[in-house]
Amino acid sequence: MSINTITDKINSFFSAMDAKITSVIPMPAILLLCAAMSKKGLSPLRSLMNVCQALEEAGIPTGPNPDGSPNLIVAASHAIINEVYRAMVEDAVVQGGIKPGEMMIMSQGSNAAGTVISTGSNLLPTHLWGLIN
Image (cartoon, rainbow, N blue to C red; front, side):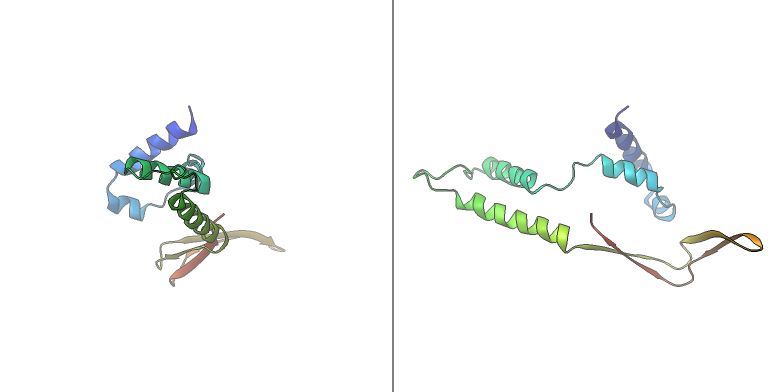
């Protein structure tokens, strides 16, 4: 069974669930990983190909001009897509928040007296930061 088949089944399962339930029950990390693995990843060349296809379908030619000069619409699209890609890869961050009491915090360690295990939940709103990789 391929990863695409698995993620399609998981996505259809979550689509069938009530939105209230899915907002309360956190998605396990393994499901997020499976969904991420099924995507092709960000590609400026693939995006440019999709834009050129959409332009052609709209009746806008994407080949060289009749005099042989380069098509400026494609050149402008390429420059825009490359900048968006650069900004996402180099500048973008992911931010999020967790409402008070929604995150269970667990820790485990040891000291001279033995193993120490503690559990609790966040009492204050929690702010998250991350990078897009």
